[in-house]
Length: 105
Image 1: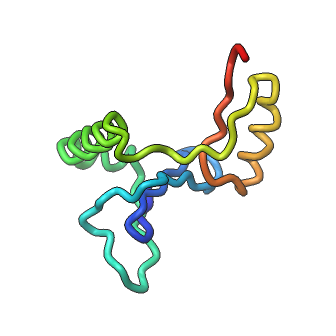
Image 2 (image 1 turned 60 degrees about the horizontal axis):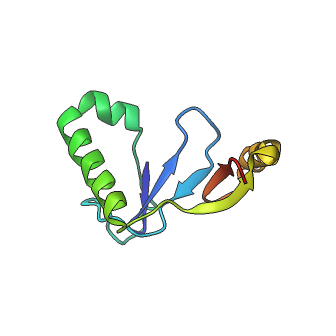
């Protein structure tokens, strides 16, 4: 997770550094204006080192999602038959947002 301009960016832990942007800004205590571009966190490290804070942050994030106060950025909604295209787009690291595969349409 990276915080830039008071927005939370989430990247895959084991993949390329393509970032996924949460559309609505989420408050973060260390997100301050200035020359620093962001504050990087690995979610696995946070979970292991600070389990209480991790649980609190995750609960806050899920509460915001449940209330509709924030939502993930969705770049594309594609039929399942276009899964290969979704993978190509993700591999290009040029996609900002989730690639959602839709079944049964």
